Amino acid sequence: MQGVVEKVYERVVDRNRGEAEFHQAVREVLESLEPVITKHPSYAEGALLERLVEPERQIIFRVPWVDDAGEVHVQRGFRIEFNSALGPYKGGLRFHPSVNAGIIKFLGFEQIFKNALTAQGIGGGKGGSDFDPHGRSDAEVMRFCQSFMTELARHIGPSTDVPAGDIGVGGREIGYLFGQYKRLRNAYDAGVLTGKGLTWGGSLVRTEATGYGTVLFAQSMLATKGQSLEGKRVAVSGAGNVAIYAIEKAQQLGAAPITFSDSSGYVVDEAGVDLDLLKQVKEVERGRVKDYVDRRPGARLVVDGSVWDVPVDVALPCATQNELDGAAAATLLRGGCAVVAEGANMPSTPEAVAAFQSAGILYAPGKASNAGGVATSALEMEQNAGRTRWDFDTAESKLAAIMSDIHDSCVTAADEYGRPGDYVLGANVAGFTRVADVMIAHGIV
Ligand code: NDP
Image 1 (cartoon, rainbow, N blue to C red):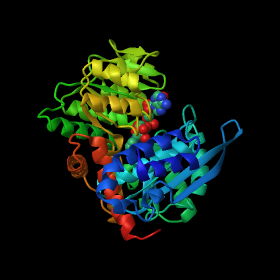
Image 2 (image 1 turned 135 degrees about the vertical axis):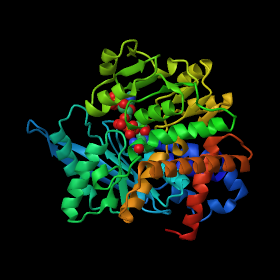
Image 3 (image 1 turned 45 degrees about the vertical axis):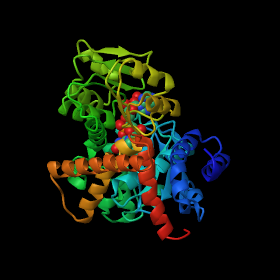
Image 4 (image 1 turned 90 degrees about the vertical axis):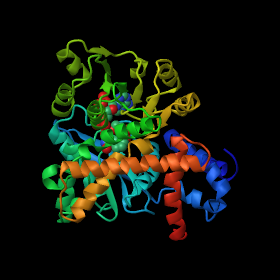
């Protein structure tokens, strides 16, 4: 990096000490912007870049709750309202013990560009807590969610800030959060949260959207080479919402997903993942990946390796940030992997991204390939505002059209800056210019 973008980056590091993931996310975007600033110096005027990397508002709050044994716990809650140029802040809530300000800031920053790419009129935000739902009873999760929402409700609203799910926050948690919001406000503001249940304002396809969208993006990338997913061996990491529906869509398109994982290890099922069993174990029983292996002859559990050791044609990282490092990327490339589409946010380290790019394979950054989730959240908001409900095929065809548009926007921007096939540059530049143009129109705010 050099010039103005380097100065902006140095200031980010200086002002946000110890927030390594936030630095990493900012660096990746700023590096892509160098050619844009050279061609259009006006984007560096009015401290636009400095404003872009500073959240509009950061809310950090205490979340006390009582467990089933009567013991009191104190968690920390976050909501980072990063950028509202394009619409109300929009982004998920993550409940995981690793959550801190830097993680939420990196996710909120990525969300700005992702949401811009969807062209759905949504700004960027993210939130969460260091609460760990694993092993907690429904009643404990409910009490935590109620305490969390008691503070969060002051800051959100259908036209202000619209949270959704992320790691550790699924339909159960959104239900408890919505129930408490409604009670506090005495208003049925369906559009205040997305990922709701289908009987109380949720949208068909929202559950599937992130995983489906990731696979559709991979299919679009392959189509630029005259290929498809048909017959391809696929490695998926994670076994949560994104992973399960990435596996489902990959199977529908004729590919063979053979892995999934959680924090206890990864599973290889050479016969192809039994999706009904995986859903039963993970969605119904909230079990561990070992429970799948116990009931599936031929599947094996590996607890001391990396899911990226398995030779495949396509890799779909769908667990968490920085889960795929430089060494894992080298192993994947040696095994013949030619496509990587990120379902998770920033799952590849900078070394892994560099390895994929210098090998010239098809590589899609999460802010483009996993945007189907938030795009379908925007479709849920649209249905809520119109007090209407679309059928599955209507919602899925809208998702497919949005993913195709995002793919084409990335390709066009990469071509414009002389880097054909560079989806990192394409996503960052296409997302940035949409936000930056509106920030300029809104003046210094
Ligand atoms: P879930 O909580 O449903 O599932 C997460 C999965 O990843 C679990 O299997 C979990 O295992 C595993 N995992 C999480 N952290 C780790 C870790 N540190 N090490 C190993 N495994 C881990 O989350 P989602 O599927 O919703 O989210 C997955 C990723 O996709 C995240 O990066 C999220 O930000 C991103 N994303 C999600 C969207 C959505 O719509 N849900 C939208 C866009 C992006 P375990 O249970 O053992 O922790």
